[in-house]
Length: 344
Ligand code: ATP
Image 1 (cartoon, helix red, strand yellow):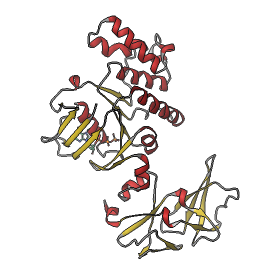
Image 2: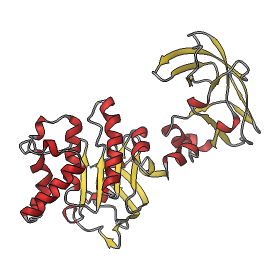
Image 3: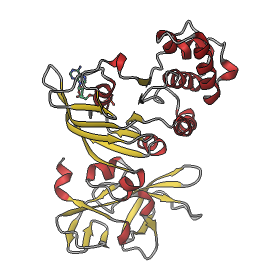
Image 4: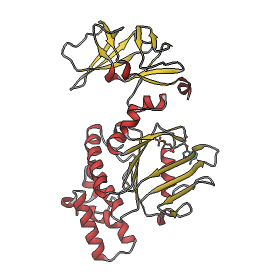
């Protein structure tokens, strides 16, 4: 199913403009993530799509060729998965998954067949009779997904479904969820404030800030070609190289740097993985912190710009705290972004 939102906005009764007029198209089978910091309007947008909030007049929501703007939630055929899972604690896994089908008054044999199919797909068959209270967080999350998918919804909406889990489990389940969603081949919208989660799960990421989608693209597009300083910082943590730009030259506190092109009217940004410790590098600074992260080190460096910057280091001769170092940054790895966006 294709989802199409046109001119969809939301002003709450107290005057809060939670969502500015927004257009969004999600193609059949596409997984789109709404990514943004707390309060940027992600949940509001998701709730409007679900039918849990009414958009301001003028906004329209289309499911294929059906205008569902005035259709209540129970008639939109959307499946929902929340952070809290909202499972029925007094029911078994099987009963939870079959609940929606029972409400729809499907014949018993159909319910059995559908539940068993979904149990299989979500690798939950061994737990079918178990009480949901006797499951781990990850298993509960799968039950919530299975329950949402069982009635064959037209669209699946997920609101921070992994937030309640600890960091290690989150990472495993993130990949599991990405595989499952593709297996279902369902159009899905996934809300998160975690860039890694969005990039791992979604085909396309819509980055939101202050009530609007500021850029939408594949994870690679957003990472390589952010259209604003906000997107550059939020997706992939690009760091600002604050200094004075003169043509294709940038003068920083710690030295001079060549830019990829004329940077007039722009600000320069760089990512940690593109900062190299190099004796011949044109910039100098001091090592503030050295953090071992298993496959690499993260170095905190001061003195290069007014703010400390960090670098990824995977070599053998690890610099020491307090050591004076030189760094090099390839001009091609520098992102030049319009400087007015810094005030956004
Ligand atoms: P989070 O990640 O923290 O859940 P979010 O991006 O999902 O944030 P929303 O919950 O959509 O953000 O909220 C967007 C804005 O609308 C916020 O400023 C919030 O305070 C406001 N808001 C949300 N619900 C209401 C409401 N019922 N009445 C008034 N303002 C609201």
